Image (cartoon, rainbow, N blue to C red):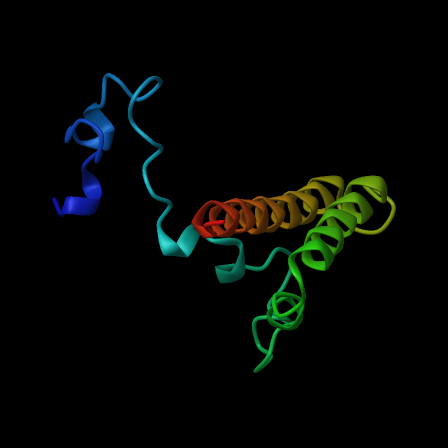
Length: 115
């Protein structure tokens, strides 16, 4: 195991951590689990040199939050009217995963800014 496999709070392995609810931060997510590294319902975006999300990620934080929030809402509200319901929910969940990543990034940036 590498250093990333151990909790920085108590040095236990994440799989065996008994203090996770109190002391240990969650185990870091593997890179392949990031929203950018997958696509729900095809490969048409992943085949592009520049994906739409790459463009959106160049926008200011507030605009990115609004875009991903709106995308999640769209898929959840149209459930069952275009694609299979489960696929619509998976697409909405994908947008929510991306939104969560953007929100965490914003929180991290705010914490690193010193007055």
